[in-house]
Length: 232
Length: 247
Image 1 (tube, each protein chain N blue to C red):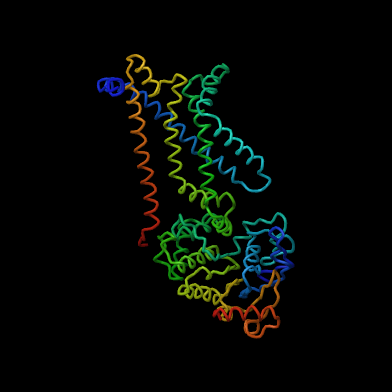
Image 2: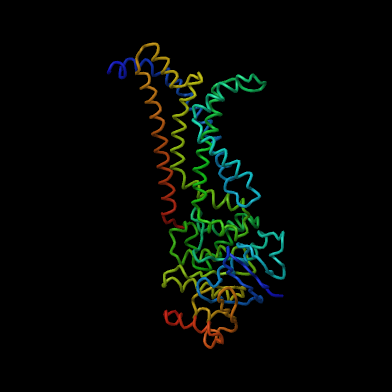
């Protein structure tokens, strides 16, 4: 077992290639994350709109969130990654990586919008009342008063979803994009040794830890800022 | 012209009619105190004036303008009315200074520097100059409530509504907040004040209105209403207040 999973030479040999492939994971993660943060916020805001006028928008947001949280991520990746290029439409990218990223955005937008929504609902209605009583309109109250508080509160659960996303970038390898997992599979198949998987695992963990510490730091900084008396 | 007029205002929450026909005129520079048991409709009345709650029937006029008409610009109306809540409702993610300047900069479109200068002056006037850069949770309840008053004043309102602003405070902090309100009254601010502080009401009010079960049962000068009210319900209420040691 030591030789099949913990072969040091094998580890050293496979690491450079896997690390290079891992850059693709990082790239997919970074691109997807930006879109997810924006789209999920929009979706959460849509869902928080009050009154019967906005019912259709709320309904769309709810159906979207239910659907993409319900369908397995790998399925969405397969449908888009194999299906979209197969349509052979003009102007539709053929890159499996592109479709993999789109699939991750679709799925994680649903998760993250729920996190945002929990944050928005955790802000007491009296905060919005105070904002509106100053004459701020609904959008200004949301932007300056409700959302800043909501987002601060959901940083830890957001990070949780980021880590999930980071790991799920490995699923795109299933389409043939050579990211870290796919590369380690290739190495394993060539050598009948699974140490390369371990190398990929080390890389994923190595990326998660700084992200976790960064969030801890953000939370601590926010707490410090609000609790430390400052001289005017 | 009256600063505020309510004509036959009705408001229900579900089956429960909280306001059952309120008529009230408040002249400019007048200070009116609303007294009455919890649930008598004081807070709801103030929230209706500020259009935080839509009314079911009746009319409300602010400075002669009907503000409850269909299509009235609620944001424009609210600029003219300052409201201070029992629980302060400061914005916890902003410094005291930002709390005060949010309205003037975002709603009135005033330049940041101007708004900050005026905010600092107002904070200074109420003994809060050293607190401008602090976040609200660093402040005592009394300080927070004074900041909330300054935040409302920064919009230069024609009318201030105070909703039991001392009810959430520790007893030793009540005086500093009441002092601020006295200064406002002395400066000629038109105010409608819902309060449980009877001696304060006697001091500051030009007129006291006793609310009971959604109507103004009795109103008049504080000396009369608080000492020799006509209505048995008012007498009962005041007796309970006295028994509780609050007058």
